[in-house]
Image (tube, rainbow, N blue to C red; front, side, top):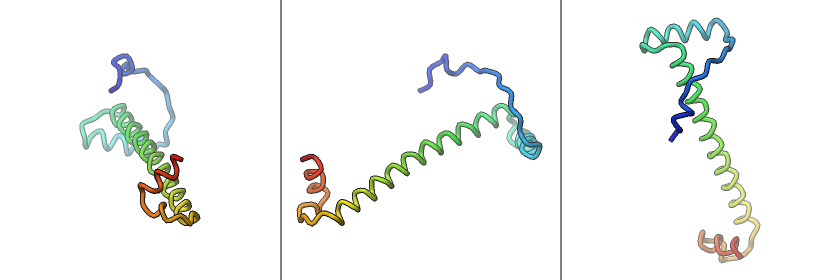
Length: 90
C-alpha cells in the first residue's frame, strides 16, 4: 500500500507530441477524465508492465539455467525437481 504522504501531488511540466495530446484529449471526453488522470493511469500501467516484465525475464533466465543444469549433469538424482534442489543445496 502506498503511504498517505506519497499520494500528495506534485506539478511537473512535460512536452508531448501534438498527436498524443490530441489522443489524450479525445480520451478525456470519452472517459470523463482529465489529462492528469489519463497520464497518471498510463504511467502506472507502464510501471506495472515493466515490473512484470522483470519478473518474467528473471523467471525465463532461471528456467534456462535449470535446463542447462539438467542437460549438463549426468547424475540420475537430478531427474526430479527434489533431486535438483537437493543437489543445488549441497
